[in-house]
Length: 175
Image (tube, rainbow, N blue to C red; front, side, top):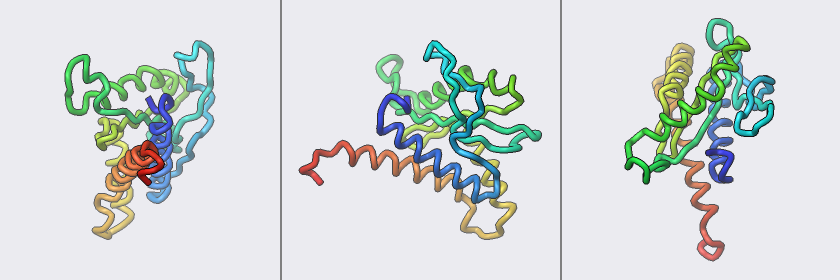
């Protein structure tokens, strides 16, 4: 979904950048757009090696984690079955797992899909990742101000992406 519409791509990149900044702020070693040379896009019909959106070093049992972000509209598929809260983000997460998890495991990496929707909903794997990062931050800081730092930053970045997309669609005379 992200690569199909420019507004979604902007939001994807913005959330990726903020997540990478949060990881670094927590003292977790990570690199964005890291070439891993085994992620492919089966829809391309050829081997299109692509980087991990974020590569988190030594994340689980000494293995690096490939984090792949996906932003979706929660209204996707509305005409098919009706609106179900959180359904679009769960479907996006499952799609990413089916697409990349096997390649990551075969190459001694962990795969973490990070699916979010424009209303700020997060898929379970994204919540687990953010909870773990928040625990690292909490263990390194005794300040109460950082108790929800991670979720606040990510939520704000999603909202900012939505706002930027809406402003970009305004006619020039409205500005």
